[in-house]
Length: 274
Ligand code: IPD
Ligand code: CA
Ligand code: CA
Image 1 (cartoon, rainbow, N blue to C red):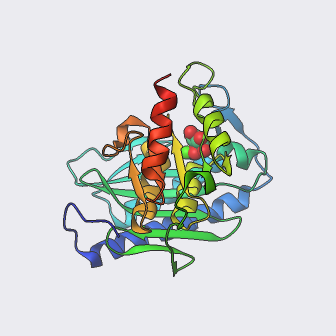
Image 2 (tube, rainbow, N blue to C red; image 1 turned 60 degrees about the vertical axis):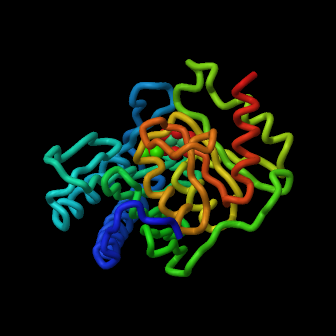
């Protein structure tokens, strides 16, 4: 478990964790109801950045649940933007459907991701894939669970024996900082690099030891806030690529089982220095 930078009563965190779980499961039911029946798939701006009626409907039920339980908290939701606006140390970061491209193609790898930032620090996280009924939960000081069973990161010690995951942001056609070189380099060095298409599930899989490490750029707070809590509470490490403290606004994350962290960081920096 991680050190808590700011002491937050554990019973209060448990209440927020249960609220996040209620919201994620309700959103999951919405996503299941739209599965294979989408009547609206739009591009939001960049090619490939999709939004569907399922994203919007799932977000609506999450917002309704949060407004009912915690009306004074601020919210950052992918499809609705920043909501609230009064001073509050609590801000929810919500991705109603993380993995929209997968979902639109009926590739069943996606999740609802709900994180709570307390004074800017990811402190509660729930990632729920309604298709597989996999529920990942975590809160600072309370540990991380998979379907209510305690989880921990993998014990893999060497990069050469690791299975990693990454992703490619929607601006990949417009920038040379597109993660292609890093992907090739680490594909050579490791047992494999997956590209799942759901950042929150990637982090949840690092937390439960299915994957040893994850890196990506171009991310938003709603993609990673929940998963960060899971990884840290499962004994993993989350930083910037260079090992410095993680910055939610940077969009760049390195999350591992801790053991391979420094080695993976060194390889990423080596590629970026070319
Ligand atoms: C995307 C997924 C994907 C990641 C992208 C995200 P979305 O979220 O998490 O894995 O590579 O950067 O934007 O658009 O499906 O919610
Ligand atoms: Ca997302
Ligand atoms: Ca999304």
